[in-house]
Length: 53
Image 1 (cartoon, one colour):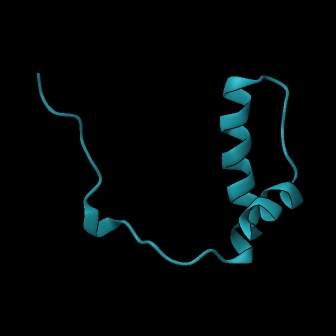
Image 2 (cartoon, helix red, strand yellow; image 1 turned 135 degrees about the vertical axis):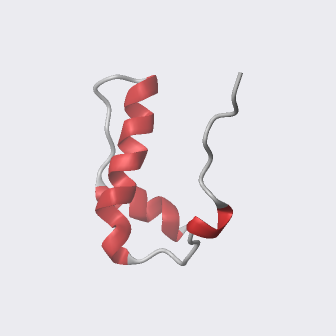
Image 3 (tube, helix red, strand yellow; image 1 turned 90 degrees about the horizontal axis):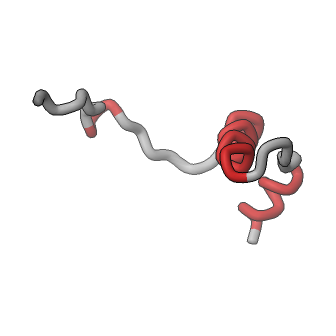
């Protein structure tokens, strides 16, 4: 059995959150929420409010 391909650590970039990221982050959060509770989603303001805490 061969190992699954992995992304090289050098290909990843960690940086501070930018407000331009809010829509993409909200889509990511909602995809995870929908996997657990179908039909449920959160707003951009809810996600940003949680980040501000």
